[in-house]
Amino acid sequence: MTSMIKTAMLMAALTAVFMVAGQALGGSNGMILALMLAVGMNFFAYWFSDKMVLKMSGAREATPAEAPELHQMVAKLAKGANLPMPKVYIIHQDTPNAFATGRNPDHAAVAVTTGLTSILKKEELEGVLAHELAHIKNRDILIGTIAATMAGAISTMASMAQWSMMFGGGRSDDDNGGGGIIGSIAMMILAPLGASLIQMAISRSREYQADATGAAICGRPQSLASALQQLERYNRQLPMDVNPATAQMYIVNPLSGGQLANLFSTHPPMQERIKRLGALTLAKRSA
Image (cartoon, rainbow, N blue to C red; front, side, top):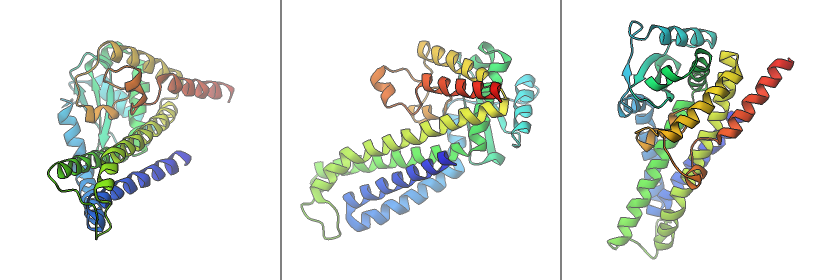
C-alpha cells in the first residue's frame, strides 16, 4: 500500500509539472491546453502503447506449439498469481532480457529474448517470468507508460518554447498569467529535468515492488536474485539494440552506460535489488 501511495503522489507531481510547463509556455490558456493534451496522450497510451512497444522491440508472438515449455511455465505462474494467461512473445536477441506490457491483466503480454531462455536455469527463468507477471498484477505497465508519455510531452513542450524564443515568440509580459521569457527559460531547463527525475522515481519504485511480488509468485526470491545478477552482467557486456524510450520496461537496463548514466537510470541499483531479495529469502526461511 505504501508503494502505491508513493506512486500516486509521484504521478500527481508529474501532472503538476506538466501543467506548470503549459502555464509557463502559454499562460492560463497554455495550462488548459496542456491538461487536454495530457488527457489525450494518456488515452492513446492506454489503448495502443502495448502494440507500439512490441513492434518497436521486434517481438513476435509465439504459439504454444512453437514454445511449449515457455507457455507451460507462464501458464503455471499466472495461475498461481490468479492472473489470466498473457500472450507470449519472443524477441530474437542474444542478450537475456524480458518485459511485460498491456493495459490490464486481461490484455497483457510477456516478451522474452531468445538469450534469456537459453542462458538461465529453469528456476531462474521462472523468477524472471514471475517478476514480469508481477508488473501485470500491479498494473505497472499502464503507470509506466503514462509517466513516459507525459515526460516525453514535457520535453516536447520545452523544445517548443525554445523554438518560440528563437523566432521571437517570447514575451516580457503575459496578460494570461504566463511567465514570459523568464518562465519560458525556466520551463526549458527545469521542466524536462523534473519530469525525468519523477519518471525515474516511479519506475524504480515499481521495480522494487515487482521484485517482491515476483518473489512471492515463484516462491523463490533467491532464484530471481541469481537471474538478475546474470542479466546485469550480460547486458553490460552485450547491450541490446532497443529504442531508449522502451528501455524502462525491461527487467534490467538493456542499454550500456557509465556511472553518470546509471545515476539517471530508470532501474534501481542492482545491488540494492539483490539485497532486498536476500532479505526476503531470510524472512522466508525463518518463517
